[in-house]
Length: 208
Ligand code: CO
Image (tube, rainbow, N blue to C red):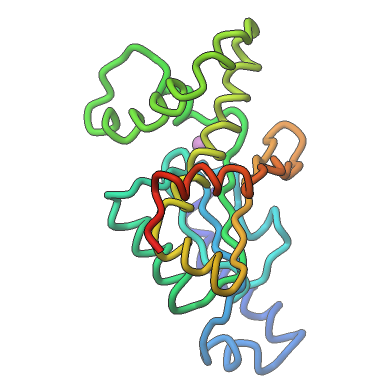
């Protein structure tokens, strides 16, 4: 991507929008009422809106390395609380992706400096699911499964927050775990059984 072409592309994009609807930006300026919160990886190949066919105003987005939901990360927690309490989103999606560099890096015996505490959360996912993962001999398949289980655990982390617990109970907010397959372009719904998980979570993490 040539940095100089961005402003030219932007001009073209504005023109394309105005060709279809002359009031497009007037409407866009009025505010947002997205029904989805998307939490995904910062990976440049996972272009959130484009792969979902979403338009501006439809998705509230947070991205970080390996789509993590960490309880002491003020950034992701602010996004979640704002989206749930003020925007009143109906769905929260955690979307991981195969071939995730963050997940791969987390499992290597290397000192990655400031990334260590961030990525250690992925090692914790491995520890929780060690029995299942250690049975997979194919390295590639093991990483794929770790990507999926990481998505699941980040969904669980969402369900541990008071804001999400309250919204699930009061207005049927739903949490979804997805994986984007960079090799095919497909979004895969992991169809995680949250009712079962929620029961376990309530036992220990019940806040509201
Ligand atoms: Co990634």
